[in-house]
Image (cartoon, rainbow, N blue to C red; front, side, top):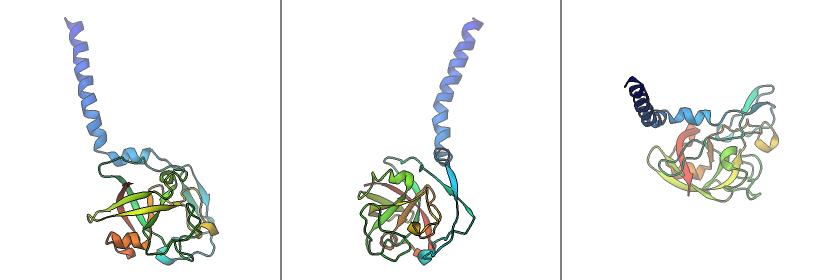
Length: 196
């Protein structure tokens, strides 16, 4: 009798664990996302002519900047993928650096365009596709992906002598910020995004 009781208790314990584990992991989704995309190294900073419009961070000589080859997993449906919205001018002479990597052109500040961190840019697979961005104030906007917010390279002329992007960035034009009713002086705000 004892030999059948122990396996039965063990099976009940395993069933209980199987039921609780997904709930426990769901309570800490940010931890799972952070662990799913780790830094792949760093680059040494080099200063240069850096356009500081939109409060761009400029590289410092010799400082180490973290790089990422990945981004957190894209969440399909539901509330979308959590990200940080930053401000960027994609205009010629703006703080975005060179022309868009998707089109080889520049975009006026009144156009709703974005750049995505390297992992989400996914080797240009999102080029010219639209995403929906949702702000915490309840507003949303559809914007076109036109560039990569490079998480691997930076501190050079092509990247406006700015550090590599973090792995969770949606870099939006002033028009995106305006459509969302956000204050551009904030520089960065938490948002969610999803493929349109």
